[in-house]
Image 1 (cartoon, rainbow, N blue to C red):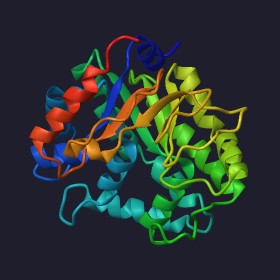
Image 2: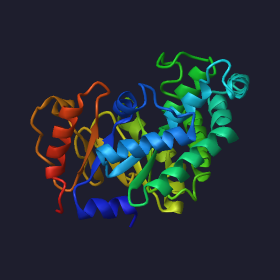
Image 3: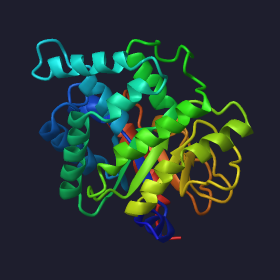
Image 4: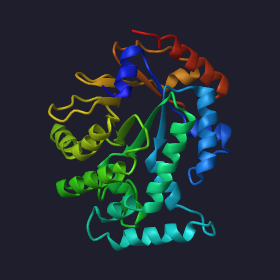
Length: 299
């Protein structure tokens, strides 16, 4: 059994997403993703204050930060060349993503961050979060200047493009096989149009699931809405607004708890997944975390 499932069986986990909040509180408002040493120091400090049971490295945010190097920065020329190389492959919908995820500088940067986190937080579960393949396609198209992010041109990509995107994502993840992470989380930012689309995506995402299984990582999917998942290609865990039947579920904690609203009932067998708003007040955050931890004991 993978380490995330083992931990979730022992007690109710609290998985915090606090990048925006910690950036405002500890990093002058902007996460220092481009600097490995600064990122590691910042994430260690945030973990010391907030003590999440799972620490997330968001590969999509890191990739976008590296691609958006400011003019005059040491790596600005390389990021400009990478964007041009992505644009040159835009004749095929998955072409820009293939170039982006194959970039050696990006892979090495993420690997260095993961190695540093594993060394600094030896007793903490570490998850690498990556955009789900259909979101990666949109992000890559926007970065290559093919379509504005969110405009819909590649929103519901064809099956061949999704299949290719999943393969490129899996190849990207293989680079981190020795990183010591515990889980890989595919993040869907938009609902699936229908049950058939959900079934197709779960099937096409299997290359990612296979890589996770090969390295002993837990394979998870984060969904913007709670829906019944079709059988056959279920992930190891799901994060959604409500627990899903038949799979370990991380239940999204309502945003109102950071303003003192009462906690909803804790679904048995699930874990808590909470995103701290960037503008939250530290006193309110500490009070909400204390309430969440009161129910994080053993089952």
